[in-house]
Amino acid sequence: MENPSPSALTSFIEASKPGGDSSGQSHHQALAAQVLHNLQYQHDWTELRIHIQSRIPGIQLPKSLVSGLPPHRIYVHPDEQIGMLKHNIQEKDVPLEREWVLPTHLQERWSLRKFAEVFDGINEIPSAVGQDGEGRRTDSTGVEGLRNKRGGKRLLLATVGDDSTIVYYVVHDGIVKPRQN
Image 1 (cartoon, rainbow, N blue to C red):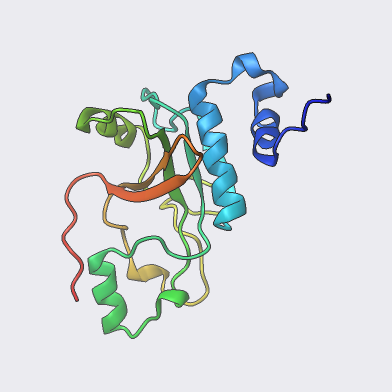
Image 2: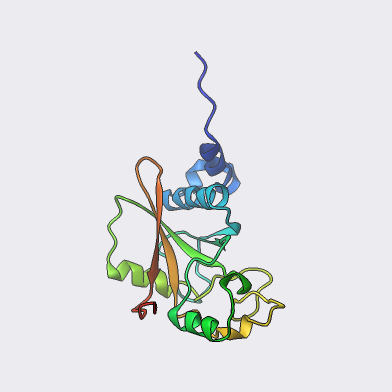
C-alpha cells in the first residue's frame, strides 16, 4: 500500500523550513508557518512574514512571530473611533495597518512576564517595505493624519488547538480604555 500524499498544510510547513531542512526548524517556527497558512488561505491576509529576530537592538524575540496585512481593520482604538465620528470618516476610508500575530499552542502556559518579553521585542507596528517611519501606510484620502498612534502595542494571540483549529484574540500591552457606545 502506498503512503498518502502530504496535506497542503504539511507541504506548506515543509516548504517554509530554512533550506527545506527539517532539523533547522523549531516547533515555534512550524507553529508560525501553520498560523501564516491559516491567515493567508482562510482569512485572506496578505504581505505575510515570519519574524524570528527582533528589529530592536539588544532584544531577542522569545519565539517566532507573524506579521501581515488583514483584509479589514482588526481593531479601532476608542480615541480613533471618536475622531472618525467627529470628522464623518468611514472605517473603510482609513488605510489598513500591518498587525503582529503571536502563534501559540493551546497547551502552552503564558504569564504576564512572557507577554512582556514579547511586547519588549516588537515595535508598535511591524515593519514592511512601502511604509514610512511610523509604520503607517501612505494614503491619498487624507485620513492618515487622523492617528498619531494606534494606542500602544497590540498583537493577535493565535492559539492553535490539537485539532488544528486556530482562535484569535486581541492582546494589548497595558490597559486600554473601553470603547464608547
